[in-house]
Length: 423
Image 1 (cartoon, rainbow, N blue to C red):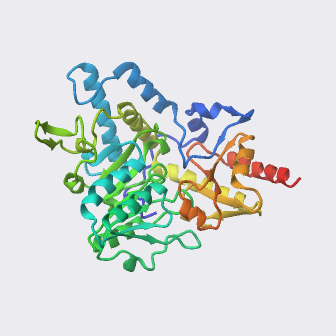
Image 2: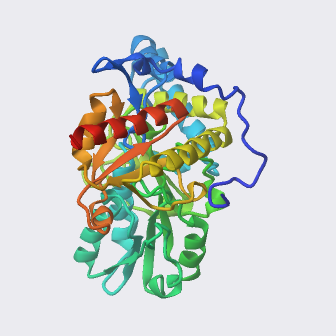
Image 3: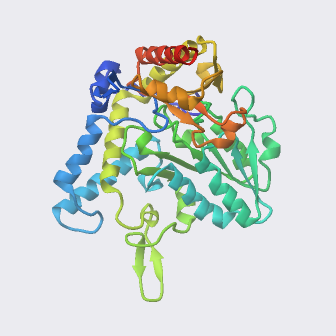
């Protein structure tokens, strides 16, 4: 995993990776759904939250609620300290050079749109091209479609092969001297494919382009080192990594962020305002207009603490073992086609599949009756799913609290559903 490793000593964590103990930290896992124990296998959409993250949220509102950067009273100072400490935790988690390179946004989608509306708006022109992959989430397709149409630029795609891997044999012709930005997912939310980000970075930089990485599916699950990847921008969402919804991260190299124009205007992103003009605040505040999402930033820091204690190498190892087991069990069903790499070592903890005779929505509904939560549909990657000549797929995705017995429940649930539909 050279594209995700920090190239240093393994992150072993400070806490034993005990799945039963981990599960005890998640109150929602005690729920019954339709009279059955909840089996939550929709982690690629959003993860569940441990008590430690929930406590961080309630503690802020009960003890520290105040605005940041604006007051000299105790509550404001405490809120500011917590907010900025969370930024520092995130910077360390992804090995950023400095906390000022971490920008708080609402989610990965806003982070992608921010880069499109600022760096790309300034640097992409008529006759240039933008390169993305065929396995992108809509959030990393539509902004570039719109920008290309507006600027007279060409949008190019790196294809996905039949085996679900990224086709790089034509990399030098797709990424050329007119390429301004390459935007690629680190790990596909449909195929589970882990893309060769360092290779894309090398080629992008050879031609003077920048590389933007959608790491929404990788940062929660593996060690991600922005310096080792040599990305220029990288973004992810807190809610997929044990944190709350409504907050995400854009990381960028300091010099690039410094040169970019603001994305929004308002309070705290200004240095000085007169009736005639305004000047902008320093990084990261230039991109954080208005009262920020203070509580959720602090809770994101708590989520980072939780994952750091477990150790991201341990998180990744657990998911690889679980995915290998799940691939074997799902493929044993005989009436299921798994999308993406068949070798579990080449993919993350995401298994999208198509049943020969049962529509994914019917399968998802039947499994819900058994307490099993999976995702069905096009997974916000409609062009990719349709490339398999289907309009929808079922998806099971795993995280730190999932177990082999839950995989067994999924497979048995599919068998039971097959029996129902064969009557």
